[in-house]
Picture (cartoon, rainbow, N blue to C red):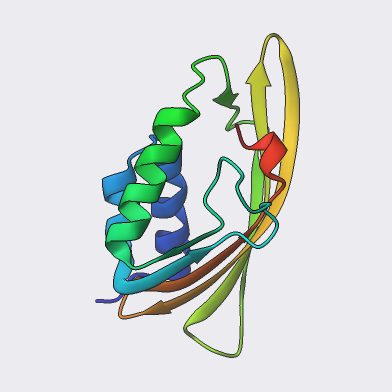
Length: 134
């Protein structure tokens, strides 16, 4: 049985919170694409990764570079809304992620557009402000 948008989204978020590049890459089809159009060229977060293995390597390298034990997601203050579309293979996530660091909470708002095939992500466009992602 194919995973629902809710299941795909929740699994994707979990793999990011746990910084598990292997698990996150496995969510993509072999020819899947991860695109972050708002990330500046040459930034810490990869702007475009094509193919599951490139996604795995790119995310693993990013997780190593950006390790910050004091920067924690506050699940109680984070929120999201999923939107299905007329295309059953496309859904959109609106996300407000709250982070706790040094006694303060900040929020990063973002939008993700997912295109899936047979339960695997074939294209994910992740629109977020990279300066708040570290």
